[in-house]
Amino acid sequence: MIATIAAIWETAKFAFALPSYQLPHLHEIAGDFLREGAGGQRWYWIMTQNAAYTALESLIGFALGGATGLVLAVAFAQSRWLERGLLPYVVASQTVPVLAIAPMIVVWLGTSWFSKAVIAAYLTFFPVTVNMSRGLRAVDPDALALMRALSASSQQIFFKLRFPTSLPYLFTALRISATASVIGAIVGELPVGSRYGMGVVIINAAQYYNWRPANLWAAIVVSAAIGIAFYHTVAAVERRVVSWSHTAPAI
Amino acid sequence: MASPIIELDRVAKTFENRARATEALAAVSLSVEGGEFVSIIGPSGCGKSSLLRVVGDLVEPSAGTVRVNGKSARQARLDRDYGIVFQTPVLYEWRTVLENVELPLEVAGRPRAERLQRPRELLRLVGLDDFAGHYPWQLSGGMQQRVSIARALALNPSILLMDEPFGALDEMTRERLNQELLQVCAETAATALFVTHSIAEAVFLSSRIVVMSARPGRIDRIVTVDLPRPRGDKTRALPRFFELVTEVRQSLR
Image (cartoon, rainbow over the protein chains, first blue to last red):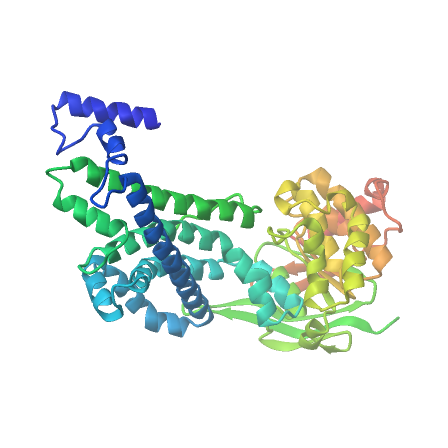
């Protein structure tokens, strides 16, 4: 698969005679990691440090957003009234471009890691809320009747039936949220004032793009790698936790 | 004769939605003695399932009274007097077979020793002790339904409510499970209320068959099944078996 992409890449560059500022050679991108940066460090090390920073922000944002999404979903599943009142605002929050909101959050919360985590959480919680609240309601009526026949308490019904039923829905959402949280953290690093993270690397690389196009491409590769790693981590946890399920519901 | 375990007095149920009201049950009266196996048979939409659910306090009757073990249906449900089996097995797919059978004991807060021992016994009773650690999807439909019967028996209920439990199974599996169900009922001395579409099944299992008609659902006839017990493959070959099948079939016209 990777070989195929590489082949198409290089063929396109050759066939359309694309200059490097439009599409650099793959070896140029790879070579960029070995180049010495301004501070005397090699770029692979600069990238690693910034990627770790972004990954950490994403992870905290993911946890924060996941927890918020879960709480909202449980609240919505408990009360139609609450859902009807709040859901429009939750939806509205997602129609505002995150690029517009990010600078405001950075202004409010400062340029530390925390504001980035909050922006990551902002993108994370929505899929969790929507899918999880659907999952909590996706209970088979007879499974519920069984609980009623056993005169189970509402807590028992929640923990023994509703919550396990919703787990496949939760994980579908978490897989989407995993990649979204990385995007959120990177967008959060773009505003002026940030000093670390892939967002900063991307902004700088974009400024010097005409000189060193491979640098931006290398930053893109690293950012994508963080998202992919997150996704697969969640998918691995999902396989362990929801091993009984062989049909993952779509979002 | 002992006092009735289930007593329905002019029970009616009307389902209402904005468009119209559907009369599922109209003034149904029935009394069932302890240890009886009573089947309810009738055309689709005759309120068989509603009747079962009214007895189990899963549906409120619109009128009339239901007494179970000398108390209200609601109290009987709270006392966990019912074991229930649905048309589909309704197993919790994240639980193993053993854990599914343990569920009622867990919900009822039974002591640990009982929770460890009882499910094993029940799986042995339905012949699935080798599958304790399997997950439901690894089992055939017939095996899943046996698990759900074991689960229904977990709390030693005095009443078994069964809503077409074998309706989705093939004929051979169904006959085998009919046989097993009779043994289970004989061993547990539970009173059974059994909804079915199959005349032969009703005749084979029951001490009495309640024949219902539709719109509104009411009891047309009650056929007493005087076939000797224990029943087995030979029962199905008796002339009396065919007479009763014919009798029920004619009542359904």
